Length: 205
Image (cartoon, rainbow, N blue to C red):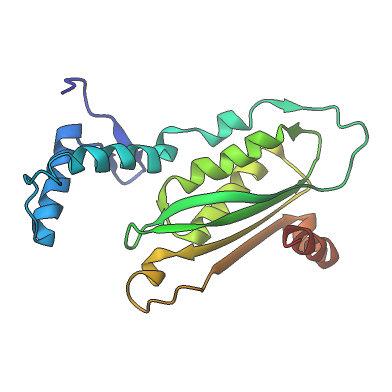
C-alpha cells in the first residue's frame, strides 16, 4: 500500500475532500457486499473489491483530467471557414450523482469558430473527461459548453446530450425505453433560432 499523502479529489472555497487510500476503498466495497447480504470472503467475491475499485478508477478518471489542457492547442488558420463545426454521436458513459448508476448515450457538439479552432478529437476528449464524473445530465451539458466557451472564445456553442439513465431503467419506475435530452446554446446559436434549428437537424441526422 502506498505511503504517499492522500491527494484531495475535490477542492472548493468551502471544503477539500481528501481521497481515501486504496485499502480504505477496498474495505468500503467489502462492507457494501456484506450489507447486501453476502459474504465478501467467499471464493466468488474475494477479488470483487479489487475489481470494483479498478473499475471506479476507470469510470471516474475525469477528476484527474484537465479539459483546458485538451483545448489549449489551437490553430488560427481556418482558411476562411466561418460555419459550424459539429461532432455527432460522441459516446457518453457517465454516472448519476443521486444513485451512482450509469447513464449512457450520446453527445452532439458544435461551435462557430472565432479566431481559434481545435482538433476535433480534442472536443470528443472534453466530452469524455466531463462524462467520467459523478453528476446529473444538466451539469454534464453545462460543463462541456463552458469549457469550449472559455478556452476557444467561439462565436457560439451548441450541445445536445441524449442518454438513458439506469437509475430509471433498473430501479424505481423501471421504464427501459425512456431517454433524457438536454440542450444548451450560447452566442449565435442562442441568438439565432434558425442556426439552433439547423444544429438540431444535423445532430439528429
